[in-house]
Length: 236
Image 1 (tube, rainbow, N blue to C red):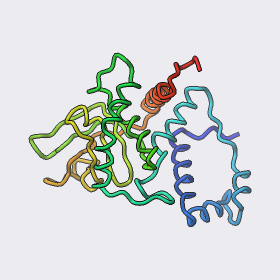
Image 2: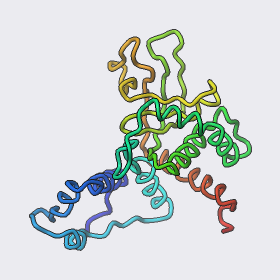
Image 3: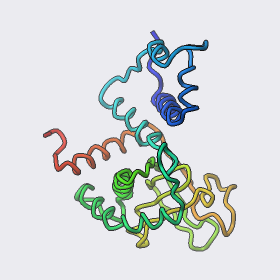
């Protein structure tokens, strides 16, 4: 019997399948996927795959976080039936949502947290409110450096933000600078060598996708969802 897939591999596998099935061409590719031959129908392909086994509540939470946090969602405005959202439009949307995001973060975060250090709850609130508008994002975490090539550079670690294929959205900039940062990916560097003077606004110094981080996010996401429903975990 094969051992269960590692969590990261499972997330990648589901992300690929989810994204493939979002287009007609992708569905044809998925439908044609064999065990390693060709011509199986989708239902036959599903039956040919061994069931994915997720052991223990902790592992299940990590698996769910890997799917929801790392691969849940696709590019802003590029899903089926969605209209593309420009940077200017997204900035306008975030400006309108800013009061609701701040209020929701304050309502759902642990009572002993300060808003300045509640980037995770800003991100969860932003993700929730954007999803209600049909704008889908995924959550990333690690460390960032704003304005990396200037005297104004500002390092934040640990940090959590939202991302799409087109933008980085930092909802917690609201508590620091009074606005939500919406940064096109062309102005985001993921390695110091990619920094372009006068262009790069954000350098991602570290990006976490380890099991400890995913479990941490899953726990707080559960708290956030309970707070939305007005329930206490364990007393539903």
